[in-house]
Length: 330
Length: 297
Image (cartoon, rainbow over all chains, first blue to last red; front, top):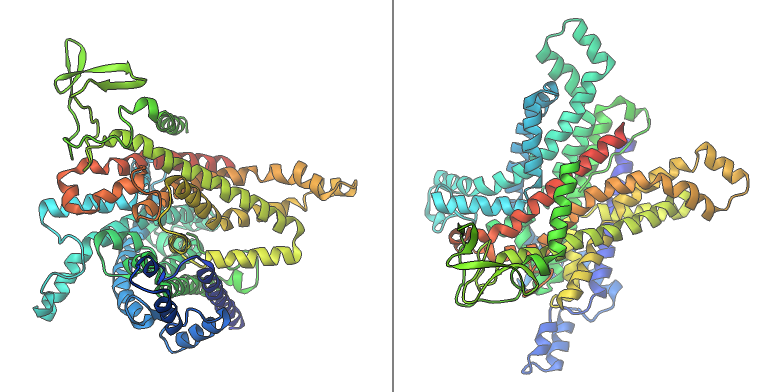
């Protein structure tokens, strides 16, 4: 319990540091939301200065950071100048769409990767192994962007799936069942791209972990005692190979908000990605800060969850041995 | 390993020699041929023809070309009638060398700060590693976009290139730094290093003669992992309009034209810059695997 508390405090400090740093950085950059207005000769400098005062952009930095912290405590996370409202509710909508997309894709990728990885580990050195490795290498070297475009072309040519977006036009008038079906059909393509991007990495890790476990002395002894293959694989070897997988799973959880940015932009999925990009181009720093903070929170929480799960699953770590707290990657 | 190296060398030579291998300049427009499909090359009496016109080799300082009014678009042309093949070659200069240069920046930062943290330890180590955690706690692509987004948006291609190298390189310093710190930390306690220290060797000497050579393996593996990642980062940034801007080509901003899917569906050759990344990534991936295997033994 003390371990959990210590990790949680550490995570909180980390997030606080990120908020301070990104705030400092956003203040140090040239130009703000009203910079483009200066190019317009009809708008007088006084008006722009007035606007800046109105939105508090001319106040000293600590005061602005204090105000931002207070609004974050209220769940507003600052004010969006393009949307003329607090950032919090704006993010809320987008987060739901992103989580739906990445949640389904992550679940699917793990459900496929675990059996395939285990199968792969038991067939090392055969031609099937080489074939699978070739396919995985190819999947790993095809950029998500290209895959997304390819599937979009397929969707247009065949008409099997809707092209981009999350709902059809007029979906509001459909019945509840039809609406769910509509969103599910829109999910297929982006989920396919995302899951295919995650698969090779997952399978490689599972294969490596399982191969290592299979060569451990206890596995050889268990096999010699005649424990059935399936039972040996899933009851004895999988738990032993679990540690790196738990870290990987934590990382999967952590990137739930950030893994799909590019796919969302290409496929027109109304998630956090497009919002973030628009906010950057419009210099709407309130939204940018909000998105950064929320995605960092997810990543930190994912790593925290992985650490806690490792602590719970592995007695070696509880005893305070080496190799504590494996960080995420990405 | 060898075929992968061969592919990479081939691609880099083609891209570096774009001025020779490409039949046209990257900005040369043929307004009368927008979205032309790839020009069919056929042979008559053992001589290659592009459509009705014979291919000329080594004319005007280029490998091949065709006399006016003929055109040769190996990968078709884009909306302005610019040759996609030539633009892929020239665009590769931006994309591939952003990856290489940014990797060099990352590794330089990583080597410097990682050695500093590992060799001296104490509060230097604490500050550097805690600071590094801040970088790791942000999703990589978000961090990249945010840093780029906070900087001026509309700039010259050369500046944009340097800016991207600087951003991608500095944003990615943490992982190599952590790995190098680990190597330095254990290397510092090796017998021969302690012995050299006992003989009165200075810190700078120890680092130069004993510590740095130990980090070579890590640096090599990190390079093979980072370069493809950074090439993709450049493609992504330019695709999203935050990198090199038209008319200068990069694989990313060329793909941006394919973003309107109705354009893409009838002109699939616009995906050529995306396909060009595949052999490059495959090559680096294979080399990374080989390097990992050889260091694991």
